[in-house]
Length: 619
Figure 1 (cartoon, rainbow, N blue to C red):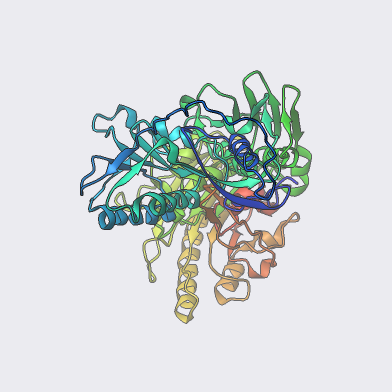
Figure 2 (figure 1 turned 30 degrees about the vertical axis):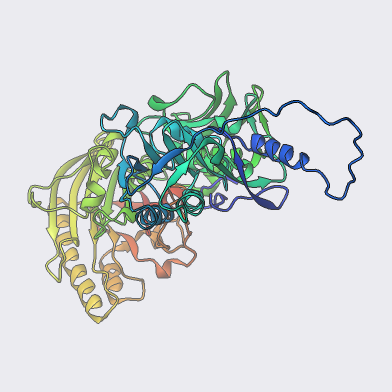
């Protein structure tokens, strides 16, 4: 089902591999000279080894004369010495993004080299293209997916599998994820470092291959090739839609087949088959179709992206053969009209929108990276197309970066931030106001920092606008009030309301126009602060003939570390009596038309607040 007014997209953690036929049997196989090992090759070799074993109780009935030919003498291939006599000229390289389990295993490995072989193994973080780095050691231990070419030995592995293999003078140790790479390291420690009298050596005959043996080999193919040979391609500087689709498609493929595909940008794609994800301006439609080189997944909007993810996961199974005839498509416009009525229906001449973007006080916390969330919010704002947009908690974190700052992203859709003349130039405006210069123009603007108990995040940004279509004027502001759940907090909110209403009265009197004031008031309908707002203004959620009786906040979204995208959206379920975000109007000359609380998936994944939409007409 498509996710609009939030319906969750199903996915499985990469660490939990579901196998269609049930059990997984662990096997560790020693094989000679294996550089790139497929699961099928491992199974074939295992069967050969087992079939070569005779039955001990079967009597020998062979009466052929003894063979008197001299036996052939074979010479065992020399093993590569990694450490001996308290010295080693090997260097250990690990990826920058190595997981916590693998990092701990690397520590165990270096400790084992110290205690067992008397060697302090040099460890280098693999930051980039190691093949072109002048100081790259010829003799190296490569942990996991490094940028060395030899790490391609891991490419054909499936989930739960790992290998330890020597390629020339470089030893490759790892699996596809954090857990299997850690297990590979520990297997090498136990088998080749501990108890070896101070000498660590490894040869082609020592190659290890650990397989969670799948009872049924996956038949999922792309253009006749095993799916494990494909990569998922997204545009360079990809917006969040293709990134999300790539993450969920990769996770689905690893779930049904055991293979984890690489996600690469178009400028780094290889020559093999691909699953390419793109987002265009094709409306709320998606198309998934094969061509001569791979599979193209194309969608025209955030809603179409999520629908394409659902379609792919619903139709691609462990036994699917994706060939030239494979095609899926859909148009979710009709479903959107029912789920998000204000998205495609402007009930008035003008639209005002406010949203608390969850940015205050977060700084550079990687758990609250704003890049994806800013992109999702900007696309949603552009889809709802307000004439005036007010944000709260628009912190330095939300504004950082030249490309993914919320200000830059909104500018890409034509929105301009109001910089009031009295706004401090050395301070961040946490309550900015944006407008569409093609529909309204600014007559006057101002900035007001609340005096009562302020932490520099509670303020008002206001402006008087003139409609370019009608020439009529209105004022609007974005504001944020104190959050403390205490007697002190109640007093602060009441003080903030008093300061706000003084400003509203002044602007309304000077310009003789209605004033729309909205934002995060942190106050419910049963409080003194709300009652004072309601005495002067009119609650658009109550007054609008088309409205949404819902609360405006919900649980925080969570960044799924394995998928690398925001997940765990929770739709608010309580009524407007528990809403803390509001839009009020004051003054004559305005007709309320529509009020909507936006609970589309991407808004639920962007913040703990829902955006509010208010459509109105100036009389």
